[in-house]
Length: 124
Image 1 (tube, helix red, strand yellow):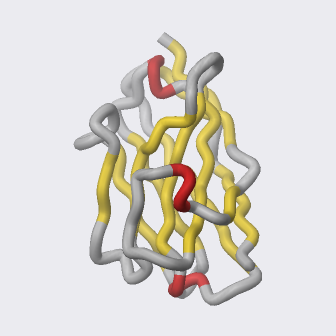
Image 2 (image 1 turned 90 degrees about the horizontal axis):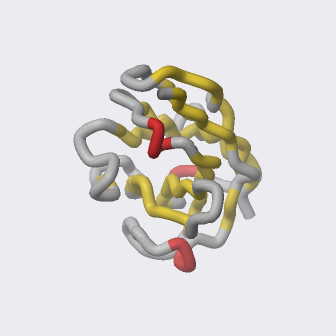
């Protein structure tokens, strides 16, 4: 099992940046591939980004491609989401997730472990 705790959310103006962190504990972090998802009020969960266990492969949702960057530090058991050029439509609760089997995934149901989420609000 792995426990995930997100941090780094907050209020930022349009065009600003934030870096989210997700700290993991409880298992061998480097065995897991990881993802970030978000959920805006009244909407379904949306895939944001995913990264393979060793960090060599990444994938992004269309709405964040070119603005967000996912990375991980296996020595620190932490995955990051650098968010630049933020827009009001990026406002959501952001969740990190982990899965043991597979390489990367954009599908929410392929992730086993989830954090509690961190709120990101982008003001116009």
